[in-house]
Length: 285
Ligand code: C5P
Image 1 (cartoon, rainbow, N blue to C red):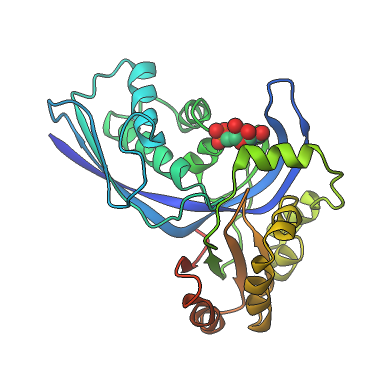
Image 2 (image 1 turned 120 degrees about the vertical axis):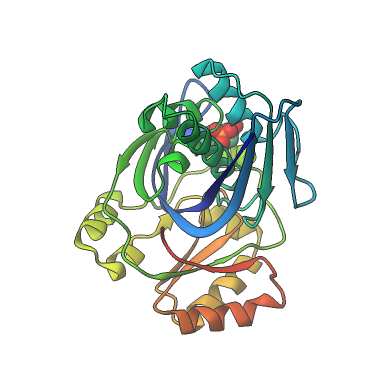
């Protein structure tokens, strides 16, 4: 038996635009995603000789075939024809759920990377990302990581220049958001403002953090903020302590702030921690 270790990094959406609804029910997206240092840890025992087991240190996470990490191992085994000989997956969870941080997707992507590496890379990184797309729209990006423009359902990736170094505070309010419901909602409203993805790409190319911050925008943010006014409270604290920008990530409900330095980030955390225990300091990775 061998034990594999793999980090599973959370993602934030620097931009998120919904271009329209597709015939398959999904939505056409254009989103710049970024992995951050907030992470789950994945351990996999391969070749246990026993039925598959999945364990997670956090309550409420499904520990069976419903878990995306389990699905990832299954699809990897099916597509490559490799018999895993029994596995035990252990997940140490730090990424909050229903947050728009891609926690489940990150875990699945980590399983794909770990298994592919262990078995001598039968799949190219591109093929591995594509395989991830069969189980979730964010998984292809989580396989690749870094900074990417993601289009289509989220599975068409283009690697972008790295996000400039900075400190990112992530705050998860208590309430969660149903992703399918939010997509349904956006179909029924006119989107008043769209992100300028070209300007975001130019800012990344120039390595200009100020310009990156200026172009952070998520079309879902105003819809969720309108229904949950406490988002404004979180944002106002971030704003008071010098955030270059603040915005909801993905379909929410976590909000991230790009901070000019660690000291101010720490102050924001101290100000919010009492009411929001789901608060983290991280960096782009
Ligand atoms: O692919 P995934 O299972 O992560 O998507 C969750 C839900 O988000 C989908 O069932 C769909 O309602 C919505 N979605 C969408 N268009 C996308 C990605 C997700 O409508 N491009």
